[in-house]
Length: 138
Image (cartoon, rainbow, N blue to C red):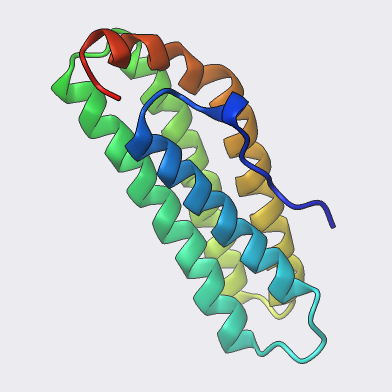
């Protein structure tokens, strides 16, 4: 299973957001590690699924506070993509709570979240990198 690796080319030139992106990848990778174990319990899996979902929402909230604070001109479109992600993650978390195949859903969620973030950083988040630098943020 491919792991998510943050590299300097993923940087958005803001230490807080870069650190959060790295943490997000670590949590997604730890969920993937858990899905590879044969002895994992449903409870362990649900704890990690919740951790990933909760951290994702925390991270998106951090970005959105920055958008509001510095009046980021593309904030509406960016938040729209965040909301689509939130909806998808909420749906997967609900499926994991209600479903029997928690391991499969956990793997699906980790891959979805990690892939989404990789693509989101590479495109959408790069749009605000220079904007925040121009506001004195690093």
